[in-house]
Length: 334
Image (cartoon, rainbow, N blue to C red; front, side):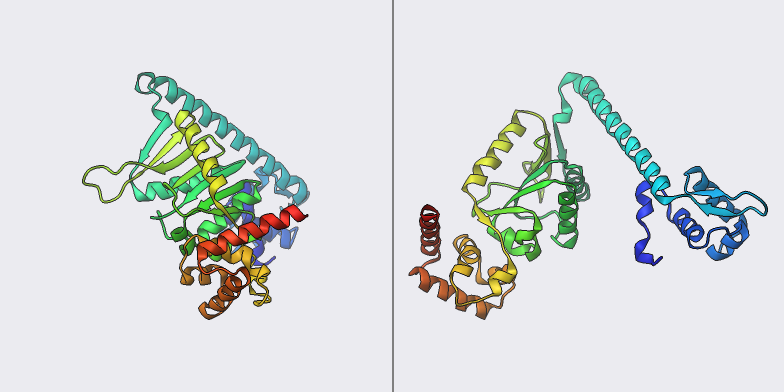
């Protein structure tokens, strides 16, 4: 088995060294402890310890007879059993966390509910908490995205979002123009699974997870160079933040960028309007739009002129208004 097909047993509590020993048994069933030790390039006592741990986890078994030989257990049965045990452990951890949180609520600060609001000023802790919020999402994540960023947006942020969406988490995100110009183009593709909209003036950064917890900027303390963030849990404030998001979501402009469609038939303005107009109307620079659409500045200039000509528009705002009116007219005709 190739190296890129390994590493996944860590998800069910198998260490790297145990996994290596397990695959050594899988590759050649019936080997003795000494033979496996040589295959693993380790001492026989260490190999025996690894095999004993694998046997306790049900992944290998001892063959009848002498000398002692090792056989792999049926993977579909053994690994499924480990996965079930891991899920049970996670369920106990979640229950324990809920009980601990309730204990803090009932005993902390004379019943003043200190858990409803948490202030984070350390940048490393803040970045970690953002990751934890995203990874804990089960149903939906709502977000305002604007600078300054805790860390430079990159592939790691996109990969984490995709992993959450693979779990069934719905993403609705409103970007401001400056943030959209900085983020990766892949984040705005129609096939990314994210519902993205654009709003010229977002009031702040915001993340809301499952409508049960939110993070937003904290007021800057006197003398501080930068502000921290507040983590808000179930409260009237959290309810108000959800209402704010939904209100601005209705006002924001939908964005969906299929790069292949943008590149095709540059003389066809209808193929460009849905892609170009929201970016133009939002005030993004030509450089930012070129980067997001992944087209050259010269190509963008030609296509923008063709779009303006087809709409008989002279400004970006006018192009947006005319395109929206055309879309409404086409909708009524259907």
